[in-house]
Image (tube, rainbow over all chains, first blue to last red; front, side, top):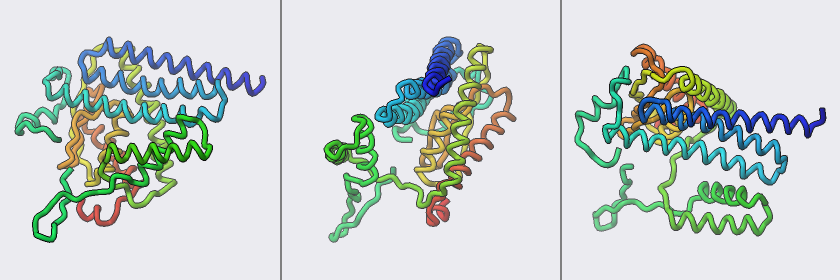
Length: 121
Length: 186
């Protein structure tokens, strides 16, 4: 087996695993019971899935000039998914979109109930 | 962010100004520009620096107070552990998604030791990507993170998660030790 074949196989494996994780993320968004649980499904398997797809593309292209661009995709994906999941979670909690029956421990509602509403955190 | 104030000669105070064009931001933006073009020819570098300076002038941001020192080996260990955790997070969430429709969760408050904004941001970002947690609320005043944790059967598991979050902060602090003055404040 030559190097190109080995790299192509690795690229295909990465692409397939990444696509599978994206599928699991989609199933998770459908199956999870409330918004915050869905955020877990939407952030984690999806981030790793994107990383694997990008890795697969990089292994398949084998072009040094695209490496920096692909790294940029991964970095931006990791930073933006964190911020968006935080903001959606924060807004949903304040808007009362929380299934309290699913929570074993809830240390935030206790705090929020006893404070004046204000804009900045 | 509490504004830093300067006192004028006549005794009144005004918010302190900071320079809009900061070297780290210019360097990072230039690197992004070069990554987008996929080339490091001199003309691209020049264009990147011009665009970066222009961006900093149009969207000025306060300077980020980074850690004073970097311990490379511990930073590598932190990154390695982080990558392992990202994979573990995906496996864990996939398992929950595929095998169980009904999960018990928890919202846990984690009081960070460090008073640095940079550490708070870094820990919050890393916790969002590692197993089972999404940051719901971050308090800058008390350095508290409120995390939504997936698949927590009882209060004991919530406590275990709190310990693991504080361990992550300790790893961050070990890799990027803050300045001595900040440790006194903390």
